[in-house]
Length: 441
Image (cartoon, rainbow, N blue to C red):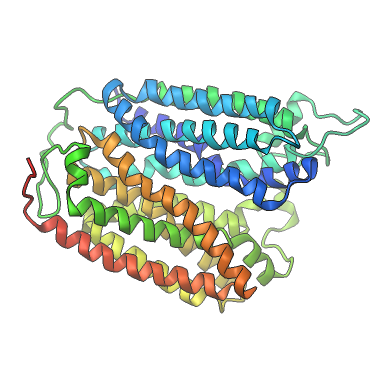
């Protein structure tokens, strides 16, 4: 088969799964409907991220055994079912139903779906691991950008009189971001049903294009280059967890992802405060104006950063790319608190997104470099638990620091410090990767 079809399938799957980052669009409709406070709704997002990370371990192991197509399809079904059940079960006295459906079932669906495109991509492209891994996960970074605007319109309550109820054609136009609608939506229940069906169908379609290459396959004319920081051995997860290199890679991932999530969680309110209600987008852009707002710029460069840093790491090695990326991110956070001009806001949004997105290209590529591709699914599943830790620490610590000072200075300074520590850890990763490996067997 043409190996580029794997990338097409990966992008379809990842764009749908990436809508998890737009959870904030559900917050206001659910709070208005049920009178819930912010903590009640936010727990669903935290549970989803934690379940996402934890589920990648069994999903990765299953993917290594039965292939990415079946496991990815399971992920799509779970994600679709989570929204369909949520439309039926969630109620004012049942916030636990949201935690169960969106948090646990939906989070598991994302975990099953996410690992498959990455695992398939690194096996089909051993000659361009960084670039292709970045391309495979770029859709995940961009998913929220395409989803948030249309979803926020469709989630509006329908017209009580029914006179201006949305038809199928208008729902489609709004869903594609072509129009802004008429001030009415279809309500959260109908949206959950619609989104659940779209998730299940689209992820299953993308997963159908995923395959693992035959055993021993390699691109014609290509021979692997074994350097001081790569390996030709295939390491299973038990052996990997016994190596200091895996531990340091995990710690570095926690630091980098925590700093990014801590800042991104504060991005929209901080930019709103700086801009004082002003907007980047001219009126003529309509619904597409969201692409040039600070959050939209961050999301676009989040996706581009996965491709760019993946390509850079193919050239200069993974740990060196990590070190440069974290240093740039740290410096951006340190100067962020003093920005005021529109140009500075644009550059800051672009740099933060660019560098945060790089995490999701560099760490899977490094896992493949150091521990092989045969057991990549479960190996990266274990490394990715670092993101589950960061998904809890980042938003919570950032919120606590803001509440303590009522300012954004401390969260961003602390994020910058974490980035500098992550850069130092990347140097340790580089040193450990160059050391001869002594097997524990």
